[in-house]
Every structure is written in C-alpha cells, then in structure tokens.
Amino acid sequence: MSNISEMLGSKYPIIQGPIGAINTPDLIAAISEAGGYGMLALGFMNDIEEVKRLILEVKKRTSKPFGANIMIINPLNEKIIPILAESGIKTVTTSVGFPGQIYPQLHANGIKGLHVVLSLKHAISAEQAGADGIVAAGSEAGGLRSTGSESSTMVLVPLIADNVKVPVVAAGGIADSRGYKAAFALGASGVQIGTRFMATHESGIHPEWKKQIVNCSDGETALLPVDNMMMRAIITPQLKERLNDPAFDIKKEFKLANANRAWNSADFSLVPAGAGQVSALIKEVKSVKEIIEEMVK
Ligand SMILES: Cc1cc2nc3c(=O)[nH]c(=O)nc-3n(C[C@H](O)[C@H](O)[C@H](O)COP(=O)(O)O)c2cc1C
Image (cartoon, rainbow, N blue to C red; front, top):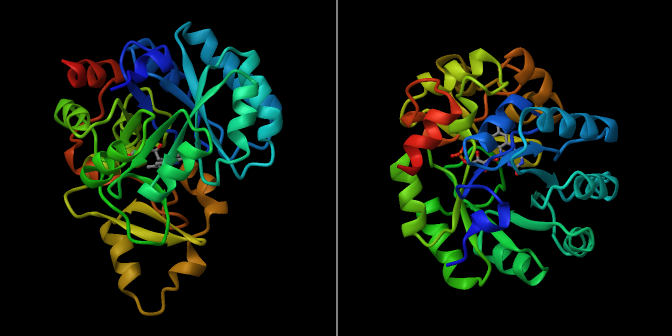
C-alpha cells in the first residue's frame, strides 16, 4: 500500500476536506501544524489576488506543507495552478469535472493531484486520466453529491482500492480513531475529513453551524437537491417542517449561489447547514490538535 503522507509531505495521512468557499488560514495552519495536511478551498475561487493572499496568510502561521482543492470546472484554474506551484504546493485535490485536461497541466507545473470521486467508474477514469491518487467519498460524507444512487464509504473504499493502482484516500464518516483505523483496514492509504474539522475552535464557520453539527443526532442529515446536484445537510426541526409543507418548492428555494451568504450569516433558511452523517458522533467543539492526537493514537 502506498503511503500518502510521503506524497503530501505531512506527518500523518490526514487531509482536511475543503468546505465550499470557506477558507480559514487558522484552521488550515492548525491542521498542518498538528501533522495533517491543511487545504485551501479554491473550488469556487474567482479572484487571483485572493489566492495569493490566502497562501501568504497560511504561510505566516505555519512552515509545514499544505495543499489546495480545485474544482475542474473553475475557468480560473489555468491561472491558479502556476501560483500554487510557485508557492511550493506539491499536492492538490481536484473535484467536480472530468480530470482529462487538468492532470497534464498539474504535472507540467510539478504538482500531484488526488481526484475526488463518488463511484468506481469515475475512479477508474480518473486513474486513466493521470490522477496520482483517488479520494473516495462515500455517501455519508458532507458536501455535494450526484443525483444518482451512491455507495457508502465502507463499500466504496475497498471497491476502488481493488480496482486502481494509485493510492486511495477514504472520505466520509471519519471523526475519531475508530473511523481512522477502519479506513486503513478497508484498503485506504489516507483519510480526508470534513465535518469533524468544521466543529473545531480553529474553524471559521459560523458558531451556529458548529452548534448544529454538535446537536445533530443519528438520522438528522439528508441529501437535499441544490441546483442540479444533491447536498448532505442537517435537518433541523424547522427545516423538517418546511420540507413537509406541500407548498414548499425545494428546487426553487435552495441555490448554490446563495450558499456563501447563507453560511456566513447562519441564515440556514436560504441554504441549509451542510454536514456529514458523522455529525452524530461529534459531541463537542474541540481543538484540531486534540482531534488529530486522539485519531492517530
Ligand atoms: C459544507 C461542505 C462543503 C464542502 N465543499 C467541498 C468543496 O468545495 N470541494 C470538495 O472537494 N469537497 C467539499 N466538501 C467535502 C469535504 O471536503 C469532505 O470530503 C467531506 O466532508 C468528508 O466527509 P465527512 O464530512 O464525513 O468528513 C464539502 C463538505 C461540506 C460538509
């Protein structure tokens, strides 16, 4: 099994899951300082100067390696990739889009990439397109999903590990040492963690969002339509009431374009609080260091 820490340059094979357009240099640096691999979320980035500023802010806080997530559909990637290379970023994750064009571009800039997939079919085509690794995100994960039926982490990770030669990173449902160890037993060479790192002191998400994650119980997240995709979100009693109202047209109400406004102001009536099923295991807001130390012990 390949060691993903070597590719990342981090002490532990733990990657921070990027969260939409929310970038918290404090969180990214804390994860890298604690031995993980902090990640800039550049998927929705439309401002090159902001990319440079964010990189500088992280570098002020840590000299340890960190990476970035780019969405293949972002037209600015051609400009973003050389900036990442100049700043010394060696490994990125790519998501949302066909990886055929971006991998030659990444490699020409000396950058390796792990492509985020939700199915075996896409893992195989990503490997053929030159991806250096795969992030296999099971259906319990937080974030955007397809509208199709998808496998859980427990099924997807071994399935992909059996069918590709590149290293596989497990994402979805990992919050503590049990999930961490399970990922390796399933054939993964690393983990990517979103929701658990959102509910940390260092995370820049709205305190109300952290509260919703901590208060979320078993069965209180669901996949909801947002534009032409699905997004796993926390179903609060208020949201449940709206969803049960026959006059409520979910497709008209929730728009990805409103996600930043909703999430920054905790106006979850606009777009609900995104989070994974693993929220049910998260009982308190902790520091990144505490989480990582507990995870790897
Ligand atoms: C609100 C939210 C937004 C996300 N945005 C992105 C994103 O922009 N790009 C991406 O590749 N993954 C995104 N993800 C997925 C995470 O990076 C990560 O893979 C996922 O949260 C892992 O599952 P977990 O939440 O169970 O840990 C997002 C997840 C959440 C909860």
